[in-house]
Image 1 (spheres, helix red, strand yellow):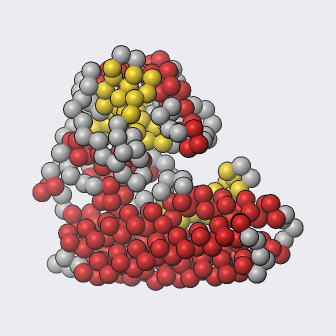
Image 2 (cartoon, helix red, strand yellow):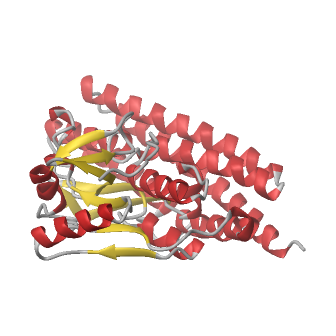
Length: 340
């Protein structure tokens, strides 16, 4: 039982899966449009939430937010099912495939054998699509890989029902009914709503969210050489920031490039050249995030106490640029709302 399927290689798993499911159903939204309409871009610095002994740093909304927000935004008839019994969950997957339905799954990276060993870690919110089964192997369209993969049933069951933080409990999801035609969607209205929500997230009046969260992280970096932390801890702290930015789920620079392409498409959809200018600025800001990461890596390799202030200043400059940009995008969205 194999479904005719076109594989799409994308930057990020959740937006990639939703884009692929929509395109399979006939709505040609690429990953950038999917990511942008779900207002998935944000920044969060959460020191009370630990990964190991490091604070959680996130550049996107929590896992599952893209699926839920996009479904609500587009009025999709999308089902989501979890299971207490792994065998029941695998039977439900087989039943959906037998009905000709591709299925989105939430899995653990650690238990997927087609991942290279060095890329496996205990992250339970990796999304992929199953589009068929041959013998005991499931056919996988994993958007972060260039081509389709195969996964034995035992391994896929382990990946679906892994324990720990963000455990998916066998979550499977898919489209129950036809999706809207592009001509049925009021794209300028959808874009306006998405822009407003993202601007609010990035300009939130909370010290740990959005541009204020970026400034808070800059202060923490600046304080590193003045506290009681060891050199080893400081290196791990900076290394953790870079890993969260550049390796986990696309990260800071990558998400900004992705959102910039959404802004380019939004500029064309709404005939607003200001959004194209905003896209260019956000792309430059993405480059600044990459430069910041390079400074942090250099500090890890050749630590100098004075360099922490330079790294913090680079991050503050990013925060200042992003604050101005998201204020501008918020104004554009409001003007779009008021236009006839």
